[in-house]
Length: 118
Image (cartoon, rainbow, N blue to C red; front, side):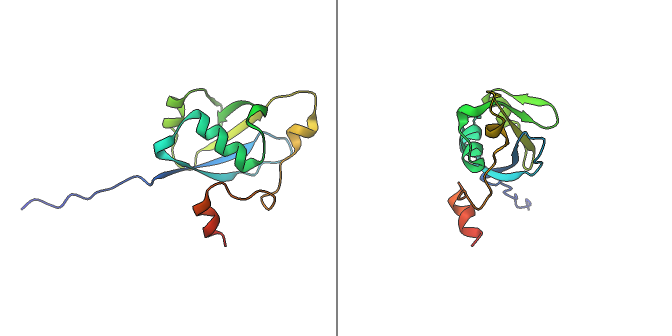
């Protein structure tokens, strides 16, 4: 008699720890990305929304400690709870790079996750 096959599925979401590069703040937030829609652009859009910044402000995305993420294939290799840092453009305004809204100021991007926090 054959043993039953266990159907082990990956969760439908990839959870990443994301922050803005800053000398003052070291805190991460957890961001959920749909595994069916993993792309560089999706990571950028969701992370910026959650952090309350404009995607045009982001110069680079780095997987900590020292790997630049440049294309969709890089994003597909990410594992749950890896740490990612958004590096903002320096345009002479330190106020822009140092401003991070509190989590109370921004609603959660993922509506399912938002419902779980209440």
